[in-house]
Length: 391
Image 1 (spheres, rainbow, N blue to C red):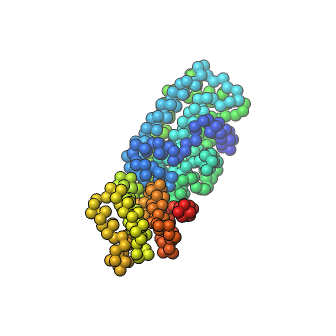
Image 2: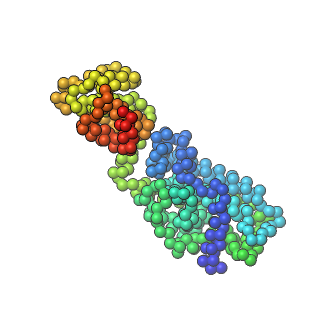
Image 3: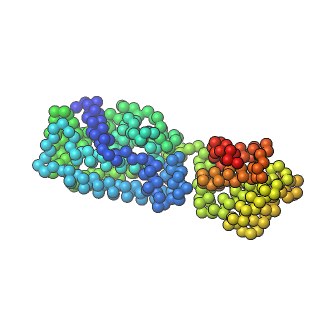
């Protein structure tokens, strides 16, 4: 049987597997579920744009990979035992159920291990696996089965994807010349020389095991070693992603964002301080501070959990002659406020309240400050316009 024909028959098996429910693994949903016991909510929210090892340790990733392997080994073994047909296969034009369930777990586990070790989402925006995804899965399965050419292809693909965005599978060309020999080898190793005329006979002769092609015992002794082999290969490629995840500046910014996110979650008083500092800046921007503006800030300070000396300092810097003469203003940590979208929107609401206190229209300087703060808080301009209209 030629490689092209074997490629076609493998595609037939894979297409049948991909029709099964639950075969497509959503990258972000899977990672959030697996990492929820190890990461803060802020870090989990960042998994859309970063790889797992950026938010957790290698040890955690390896632990989760091992759990996934054990789980799918158990499921695949149990399913093989149930699906196995005593006395051989009696097939017509369909693909044996034990073949489907075996490769179902191979496909699902391949996606999970890939996501844990840094690969992007295999599904497109509609949640569907593309042709490129199925080619990549074929190479993954070849690596799982110990196909050398698949190992080589996996390394080259990882190099091509390392510098791409993590969210979706980038358009890295996967040559059919690389996929066909892998698919052909998988077909031969699995005994899947599938033809319309002799599917069952071909498979049955290749692995003559009573109870079905992939009985529970055979699955147990082939699935887990293959899964560990794939894990090892993917773990080796992780270093490529570590080096080329994103450019140095972007990586530094993201690491800073993680630090801010942790600070935002565990030290709410720091956010309280930042928003009040921004309100003080807004009040002072025109020089003299109206009583209405002062009262808004005074009330915000009173309801905060800040130490008394900090509260006094904040109020002492509202509208003082010293602050005007020295162009005093706080260096507000807007990055900290922007980590929490709800808090960021509320911060902008507080600034609008100060700018419009007493029913006055914001001055040009106040409008400029609001525009700057809106961008720094990562809030859309429509939200600012809506808040201004409400006043």
